[in-house]
Length: 114
Length: 111
Image (cartoon, rainbow over all chains, first blue to last red):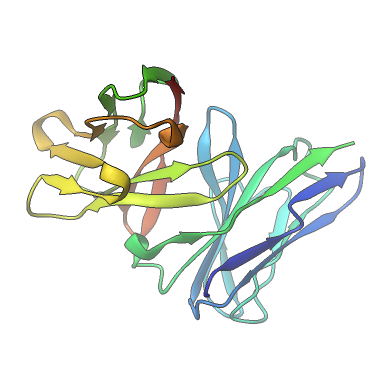
């Protein structure tokens, strides 16, 4: 079955450490997204990519970085510059950026600070 | 400012009772409108969407929503709630190829 795999399910970060969240899709979608979810704040867009080797900042990109070297993969790195990284991170994809009705979500990664 | 507002942070209903979750948006044009459901520790699942046409849309799991242009609202309804409906519900709007989410409403279902 096609879908999005996010790993790990739970991740712990030490002070000053960079951590990378994995997102892999086998839906053959061109567009991929990273959202951050905090209680009571809904989802906020961190980065998105419309196509391989291209990505754009979202509303809260500071302290994060991404790469899109392969169509199926869109890893998110939470850098030490992100001072409040504890949140639930959701990866999503859609066939193209305009096909919002076909947005498909992974099951998320909970990141916590030790 | 452009926004999506879900006025109710938390709602509790009894099993079998009816449900209405509110959503208001403030965008210049009529955006695409969506409702998603999220179980704890999971991703979001699309319940229904509105693009144009009939303002009452049917979705999965017995949910429906009504678009009211005059009120800039897109409220989600269900005639009879089941215990398995307990989850968090997000209203979202799609405008300019961008998806904007409300803060969510957490639904608790009493036996």
